Length: 387
Image 1 (cartoon, helix red, strand yellow):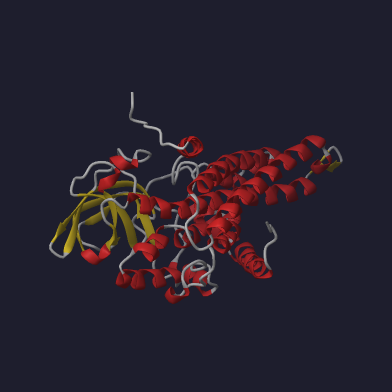
Image 2 (cartoon, rainbow, N blue to C red):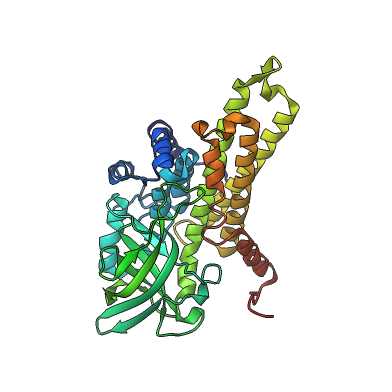
């Protein structure tokens, strides 16, 4: 088992790091102040360097590399901020992967190359007011009418809502109950009948749009069907890529915090010497470093085992759960070590603390991942509805 990155992967990682550290630090501050997402002009720069299509097939304009390569890039962006890294997450780990894998050839040929080129962002629309963790309770309806699919319903907590040009919408077909009735449809932003609520004001994730979505007789061609009823397991299998992407973004936030605070404690002096010389600081740094490295190894193992395919469910759940927990611990510890500087907005650590909490909520909450992990250990699913 080789844990050493190849020269090619090192070069990709270094390129992403240089770009993120030198070009995107001011943008991260701007995004956090204005809550405006990464512009299409910036997306074009991302795309020109291949960052939006790392694991997209070459036939669709990507680099055709394994998921691990994409996660190496994603971590470097997330070290700077969630806001600047989110487009890489959406394109390399999010719904674009679903469209590429399951979309009608004409749909995939239209959407995926545009995403890799920075010309189109795609969001995933899953949660509803009464269906988040209990996703199989979703009520957004889809029905076939001739050559069309008609969608009615409402979605909530859609990251990218109102800003992204396309949406992978989870729907219930023909009123079939439970997971057997759930499939997914691709909907373009400008489709008549689709509307968006006001942008949410979140604790963190500034620059990541989030809003309600309303579907009132939204009509799309049958070719926009991604997964028909009964294909819920296919969707969740592909969603394991997004779970690893979520874990990587959480890792990046923690790793960025560790890098910043490691420099800080060597420069900050108290009682006539750098605070890094105090044993209490040394112990805290070591604990943070172990957590970051452990999360990185879990993510890399799951990604390496997946290659260009689907991550194993248990490995993805463990990596996401662990990274979601340690990013909160590491960023909070870093803020404490920096004292007033950590608490001041000017220095960026409090932004990392705010952003760290989002990943353990999005994409399957921390406790749900633990339930899934336990189910994998005992070899059966637990009935959460039983009295």
